[in-house]
Length: 393
Image: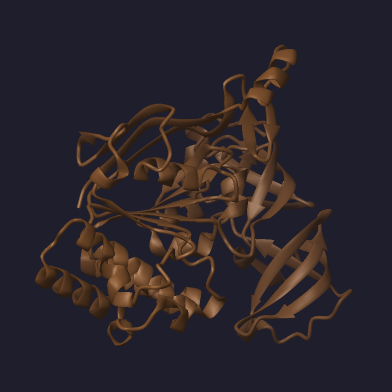
């Protein structure tokens, strides 16, 4: 068990010889963007000024779209990638130049990485044998981990005789037998089907409660991030966008990207007017004027925000069908069991409205006109210029 501290970590992949020649010819050109990464004279910048303090036994999730730098960051913690700049500390010890085997970490990969010719027991025991751990201790640790992961019955089988979920359990078991200070997990559930992913998420939550180690978990799935993490770190293009508890980032997104990335279905966005009248703040959309909640008004007043054109964000689950309000035309009505998802056109935008099945007494049809509204507590106000949340900018 250990704390992990990353101070201004940066990762740059240098150019090859041919790339350098090409850059010399265009040295006066501005830095360019390619595949979500910044290209500079030094090379391709995969991670920019990443700073994070992870407490002992905390479960941290790095989440973001493909190419945002989350796996690269994890690999730098593991020692599988060199750190271009910045400092890494594990349990208070400087780790930049320490070999991966000496960092007392364990890593679970996306593709399981099991030895096909070894049994489950042998796979889990392999790293302990390399460390020359006593045979009785190896037996104890492997069987204890197998019991935790419910794979005791499979110890004599080989990986080819296991399902995907069972193989991933073995990969996790191989990591936890080492009793590492830090457990690193790189998209471990992405190769599983939806049902197995749900089951394994629950297993990882149970595992975390039993082994009490520090977890750093990488995923592109925001559902995994929201359900697993004590805190989540949302990344884009190598930069941290926001760090907070799942509830914090859901309720108070720092910018337009976070607002659109966290939550399913995605947040609805509108072009709207923010109107200030003294210490009161209203948002006006399609002729409808809604006063913001007192806590939102207080934060906006504190930052001396003035009337302006803004991007308004409202989550689909926070909209409500009403007798009057913003007019919308139904394009698609999806029955989702507990709710109906109405895909509508409103205020010149594609919008999703979630109607609980218990309230869906109307038979919604394509082309029907409906009205919807929302409350001032669930409205998120973003700057048109910076995309930042005006309450926290």
